[in-house]
Image (cartoon, rainbow, N blue to C red; front, side, top):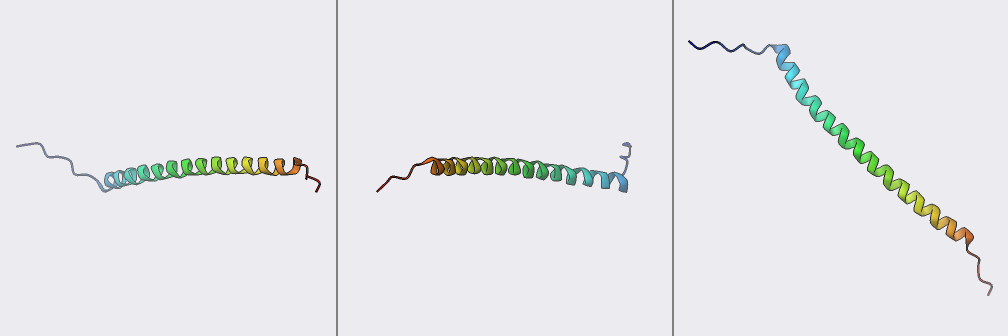
Length: 65
């Protein structure tokens, strides 16, 4: 006779389900964090470009007509 395999306990099954769910949640959290970093970089670039345009406009001397 072959040895009987131990039946999984409810606690063990819940832990396995929790591990799968947490793994997906961590992946989502990392993806959200990276998206946030990219968005912050884009905003910083836009802010820098706007400051450059404003500074250039402020230092231009209007031509006398």
